[in-house]
Length: 250
Ligand code: HPA
Image (cartoon, rainbow, N blue to C red; front, side, top):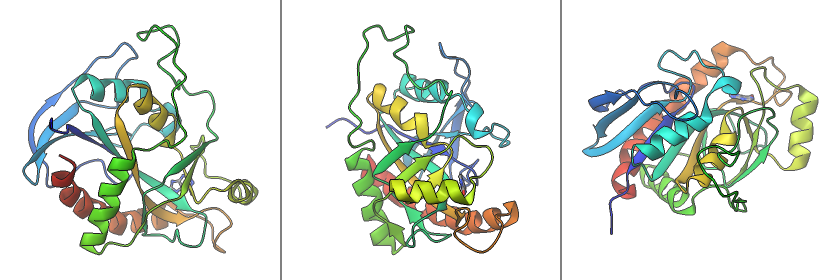
């Protein structure tokens, strides 16, 4: 069996992986423009991976301006075949409390006006309508869920991720509508990232970290301070999970 080549896309709260032993950084140029930054090649727990912070190393690229096509193209071009995408989200349904990790199994896309396909007359010639019935890789999801169990990290093993346009947070009514639609989580970066990974046939799954109750789900306003505090604990667990899962994915 050939070796898995794993990439980790870091989200808000995870712009660097402290334990990554860096081998080299590579600036990539793609037919779709520049990725969010150079790809960092390194070893984590003895396994070689590539790390790319979605919002840039200094967290300066907002969700609607991330060049998702360049990011996924660059990872594919670097020979990666598996992607674990870390994403900060708001929790909508009761099990998705702040601090919890979730491995979603479905997506509803509410984003608009993002470059969301490679099949637009560019590099990929024949138009293909990719299957998105199950938008995430079952293999990668299972490994993440299994690792969380072994580490006794609280992780919800399914859920629907609603991808919103941002960068503003949602209104309470928007969240009520999303809940009626069946969303458990809300985030701003899940799409088109997942669809682009599928177009390039990468095995892609998301590990979401709940940073806050979504709008209207607690009595309070959502503050960036609360988000940052919950993310700090959540991301510590993500780092443990990544360190553990890496050996099992390769
Ligand atoms: N909504 C959308 N994206 C988010 C949220 C939220 O409440 N929290 C973290 N990312």
